[in-house]
Amino acid sequence: MAIRDVLMRGDLALTPSEEKIVRLLLTDYPTSGLGTASSLARRAGVSDPTVVRLVMKLGYEGFPDFQARLLAEVEARLHSPLLMMEAKRQSGSNDSAVLAYLDSVTTALQKATAATPVQTYERAARLLMEAKGEIVLVGGRFSRHIAGMLAGYLVQFRSGVRDLGVLSPQIFDTLADLGRRDVLVVFDYRRYQLDVMAYAKQAAALDVRILLFTDQWLSPISDLAEVTIVSPLEVASPYDTLAPAIAQMEALVAHIVSTLGDEARARIERLEKVRHANAVTLDSDPQENGARKTPGPRKTPGPKSAKQDDKA
Image 1 (cartoon, rainbow, N blue to C red):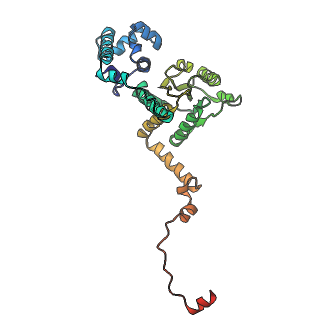
Image 2 (image 1 turned 180 degrees about the vertical axis):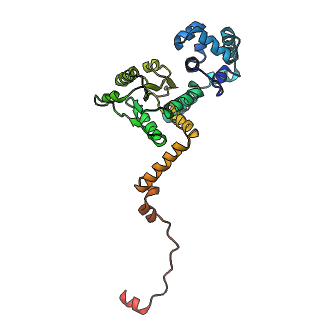
Image 3 (image 1 turned 60 degrees about the vertical axis):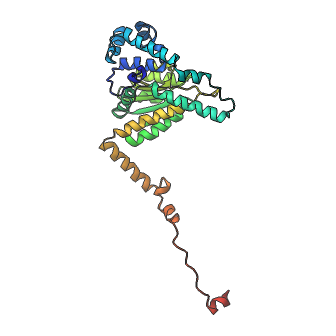
């Protein structure tokens, strides 16, 4: 089994410190594993023994064994006929900008699959659904729209969800009501917005737990986050893509849905009743439904009487 596949195994029971190492290894694979154990530990912000314990948990005899396997894997890839074929293939210069861009987004989505361990999504789901206080969501100029989407999903599963939207001086007043029972969900991608970082830093000082969605270069908020989900951004465009970030957010929602209990399901049923009573959607509007009924067969008029002809 390739080391990347070992790191992505769903049955691994990782501690938060071990999860940091796995996230770093996957984010910069395989380069991040080619240095010393100490350098890997330093970059991940953990101790040297934690690195050794992790590689042994993964089934290797120690860090030298892990690194030897990684080097062998790299060498095999460099001599792969398939890789050589791809390297010599002509670039798609005849493709339109649209097709080239969409192809690069597909590649970014594939990278996103390997950028974050499955266990991280599980921890993020527990963080959101088990929080005793509020779930507060914030993002940057573009990423705040993803925060709003996630808020729209979460409000169906639990109460106490608040999307902050555009950060203003008045929005910062919400920090006065936050504490250790609450969770802050932050979407922060390069170039890392100053007001978003300021809000997260002040929330962390109040012992608010933080779930961070960010890129492979890691927002400074990653130092404060309890759980971090990493997304690749680079595509064939001067603008970064947020498509993988949206997919990761929706993957988290899918995991939450798969674990819903009776209380959450009952909440969804109550919301559906409220929406139906207020005709929120087309399928809940009785007038619209009546107007859109499929008409029956058209009756063929019979012959007109003489009286009808006279009136005509």
